[in-house]
Image 1 (cartoon, rainbow, N blue to C red):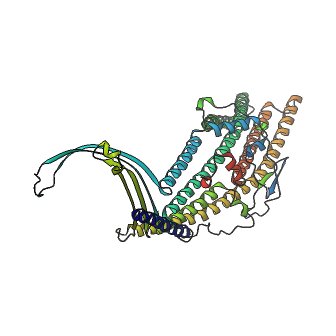
Image 2: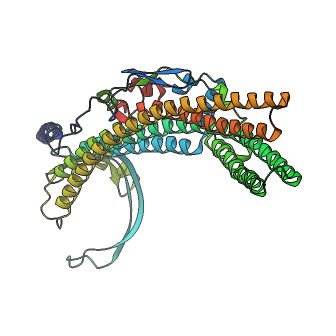
Length: 505
């Protein structure tokens, strides 16, 4: 009876020690290491040197309003009003191999986090059994006992449990640090998703633009060849100088020389588009006409202070700061004592009859308190290294914020330039088209020569190529601005599941 009371008292003592130390550890989790909050970064009132960021941007006949304070929709590519484009983006998100690999890597990271939590935050319980037959030496020097060997059996089965925790909660801090890394990877996956969608849109626009440029250049080359032939005929008839004939021949050759490279570039863009969709290059999708892609209007423009909470690259850098702070705190906590509680219960004996009898009951219970004293400087070096990692994470966070502001500023400047370029190229194309029509009319009336209509046709096709490039640049930079705005608050990605952070574990 006294033995049982002693065992009960010791058990309650261990429970009390566990409660006290665990409480101290949980309290220490919030007191150790640097601040988990991201460092303050000054947010400007506007992004670029040009402060007119909310005004209407000209687009050569159409207008595009920059909606200051608005959020980009999750499926922003639908603003181009093309079902074919929507299908391509959805196909790429579903079948792109690199994006699928990133998704699998995130799932692997989550499982590794669960494994670490299971190893460090919960007690380990194992069951083991032993059946052993051995031959052992007898004890020497005992009177009346000859020195000989003995053969016997050992049977044992035990349920064993143990739990180790640091006084200041090092395992919990390490788990939280790893959870932060998983969060960082989740935000990086979200950034990869947005980048993939933007790349598909841009590749589709470029493929359509290059197809039109190839067509216009082919007509330009054909007109140049006709003009060279006309000048050669006029030179033979004596109505044109040799210099004019050679100049026309040179112009035709120069125009023809641009065509092979342009065709190769157009095919390379379509090959890249196919790979983005998860297809082989030979199975590139059908071209979408540039006229089938509508210029999005309005375009959202998040204010700088809100951009910090929407850009996945900034959120990933913030998660890295938190994880580094937790890792530094965990390295500090490793300098303090740790307590290991263990217990085992089972049955054993030298024969089965003993195992099954009351005498076969075996048990053990213990507690071990360990205070690191000397590890060759490894623990303090690990702490200093974790603190240096935290400082690097803070610097990278600041750089990520500044880089995001620069990205938006550059895109806004490009959009403004695109609008002005588009207006002027459209103006030039209209003038060249009118001149071409008037030249053909004069030729029909006999008031001008045929080679003059060829020259006017060349000027019109050149102007059309420039206009097509300007339209594509405007559509592409609009896609870049959508991407630069980031996602709405995290409720959207958490509902999707693929971008949810580790906080839900």
